[in-house]
Image 1 (cartoon, helix red, strand yellow):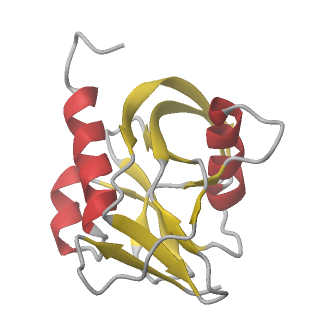
Image 2: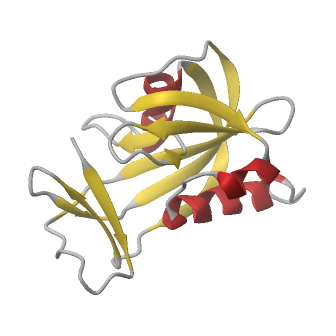
Length: 156
């Protein structure tokens, strides 16, 4: 399924749904951030996706990371809540979702790198390498918040 992200775009279609979703900021031992190259919009992003009925948001973060990257993670904290109604995501089936995403911090506890139907590549990227990558600005905001909060000793 193809998707198009609209952010502060006056020509964006009107939202017709809102679906709780999660994203995950996880680092390797060298301080590189775990990213996926999405197959639906050809952009780099944090692993994540919709919360399924019957699961907690933290369980969704663990499941989505495993499905999209092959890595097992343990949620260690919260990066932020992203609910900007000026950010909508249009899918080719006619659904237009208003953003509602909870971004978690996590540590990798196992697994092996792998891809899925949603991720055509998985990479650990050093923060200084982010500038040259195609990343939607709403996703980059979460990444930047995850980087800042990682270095703050007062955030758990």
